[in-house]
Image (cartoon, rainbow, N blue to C red):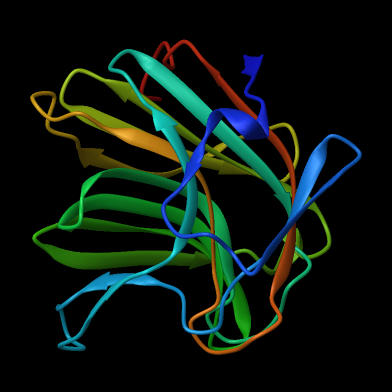
Length: 191
C-alpha cells in the first residue's frame, strides 16, 4: 500500500475544521452532516464530509482512524461515490449504545447493514475497500486481521471516487483523528 497525502483529495463538503498533526488529520464534522437516501426514513441527506480522489477499477483503498467517539450516529470510515444517488458509506458508526461496523449501499435508495464491535473502542480501526470487476469488497480491522463487512455491486461503467469520511448527524463538536490514508492493488481473493 502507498500512502496517499491528505492534500491529494477534495472535500465533498468542507468540515468545520481540519488540523494536520503527526502525519494524520483531526477533522471536526458539522452538526447534521450525513448521507442517506429515502429508505424507511423518507428523507435525503447529501452533506457528509469525505475527502475523495479517483478510485479506479482493480485497486484498493484504506483509511485508518481512532475509534474514540461515543455519541449517537457519530461515524468515521471510507466513502465511495459516483454521484448523489450512487455511493457507499463504510464506517464504524455509534448507534443505539454501541459502536457498529457497517455499510450503507445506495443505488437510488439506501440500505444499511451493521454489526457490533464494542471491543474496538479506543483502538485504531482500518476500513478497506477493494474494487475488482463489478464489485467492491469492504473489510475492517482493529488489529492485524480484517473481517469481511460486505460485498456490494459497483457499476464498472461509472467513474468512482473514494476516501475518508466523517459525519455527525446528531450533534456538534465531533472531532475524529484519522491516522492514515493509503491505496494499492486489489485483494487477491474474496475469502
